[in-house]
Image 1 (spheres, helix red, strand yellow):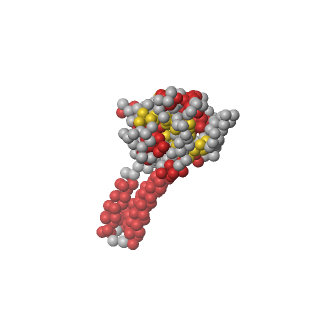
Image 2 (tube, rainbow, N blue to C red):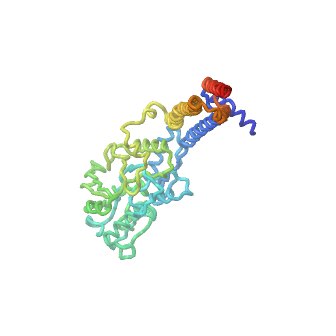
Image 3 (cartoon, rainbow, N blue to C red):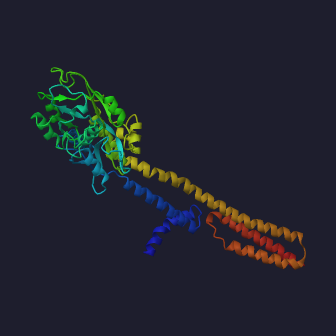
Length: 450
């Protein structure tokens, strides 16, 4: 094995010793340094390659979360990335999966406010992708104005772990309605709660898109005797809970012909954030945000065109990669002209190998220059000693001192002969030895005369 290593190093080492004029030790050092830089570049090139599979935690089947995840999958598949979808009970379960290192989940939809202020530093946000209004459908002979009007009624607030459940509890408690009071709180699935409201088995149902299907919401909007609560205190809610937004549903927005709703309706709700682990590959972060623009960028009942995705920072910090993405007015040059995987490959080449070249070329030019400077200084050092000795011979004509000067000349010659000089300095080396012989001849002549 040792012989193999010597053979591998022999050729590059000989290049640096013969062409650059380096000593063998320095040449070996340079070769090892180049090999190390090359190894690091190759390692980074391989390590930074984006995986071809991602996993997203979505929501219950039929919910907007689940539907949007399917649209993400189609979008990513066009770029050669497979998106695996894990159904869930909603935002809270998505958050728990992302925070659990044992769960193989990369990203997930999470509505604002579900953390209760206990945010994890192990997660980052890729930005908000949509509004998530709380819809409160109810039955009552007369319209209700405030959440406090629901005290003493039967309320279906969704299953534990759903975004509707957590937000409903927060807002009800803010209005003085307790879980164990006169009000009957039913923690049941969104679709089950909607059916019970239709059958007059509950007085109100709290729904959000992370757990309720779009079909369920449309059916309640048209159900006889069922009304949608307008949050007249929306401004107060948004000031008390900074993650909430005031959302307007204009008159007739659901059905212009039937004028549904019959007047403007004000809703409150957080935004849905696309959360990820910090280890998410930067190229896949950009690809996910491209998909988010395609899926969430159109104008809808709740938002303007191009409003989402947006770098709205609430409970989780926007990732550095996402900030860079939002800061760009257009796609990068490579992404505009090449498919995703080709652009990713070219970017990795630029990031991995171009810095290597930038480091090595000046370094390789600098090392010989430093070495040559050192050799010149060493040769000049012995020339200075030789000049000083010759001057002493001229000034001091005492024969008794010639023996001491001869000893010093022998030491200079011995030190010069032990120097390891590359071929590029052979002329200066042999010139120095010739001048040593010249001084020796002067000293010998003086000794003979004396």
